[in-house]
Length: 135
Ligand SMILES: [Zn+2]
Image (tube, rainbow, N blue to C red; front, side, top):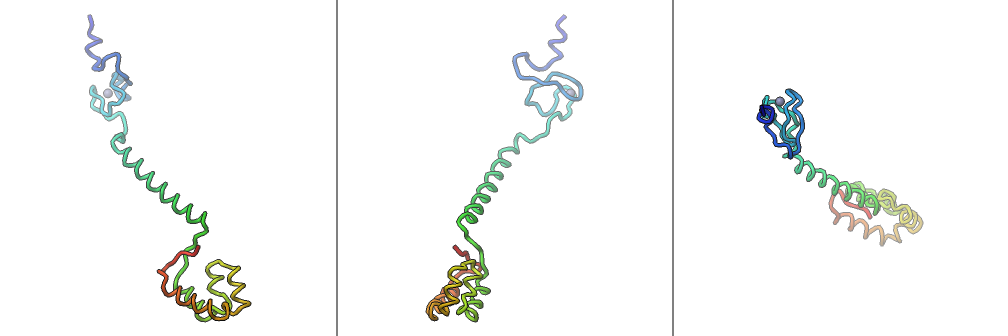
């Protein structure tokens, strides 16, 4: 008799696998075995798209950070830079703080570009957001 054909709930031409519990041939994408009712696969197919989107977001964030680092952009505290400029600006202290050693040395030897650079920098630093980016 053809009882074996009736006991297998899946047609031959479909992609099949065997239940880990009872060994029944079931559909490959089946999560629950129709024969014993046990979960045979992790239920994650529906969650995968959102995970992919999250990964894409973190990747773009990482790229932005990498770009910022590649262009030498630094984050500095406005008030530290401002008070360095106010009290030690003639020595270029705020320029060294921003990582601009070349300009700092120039300020050091010209007394903050004869006071003009120092004055402009004090005003500029006051107008910056906190923290601010140094390019
Ligand atoms: Zn089963």
